[in-house]
Length: 123
Image (cartoon, rainbow, N blue to C red; front, side, top):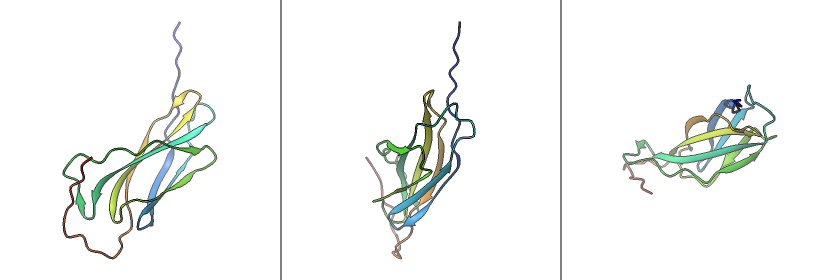
């Protein structure tokens, strides 16, 4: 006898925008196919470029796993580098396990400073 345990669907309408020069506002909607009640949302992010430059090296390491209450559909990521590009991923967890990952990119707001050099990000 085979038991099939389906994972939760992907969160819907993942949007990330600059909240300030060093923070991003992340918003999403509940998965349409959650396979049970969402227990918690999980979020990770990583630096992928500074200024107008994309990292020539591998992107930075993923952040620690952030747990977000199931009744929250947004969060702010703080203490980021100004005018920098980040990759953000969010997924839901139910009793069936982690759902499919939704992923996007966003850039923190510029501070009025011009970046004339491409910085190499290595971890």
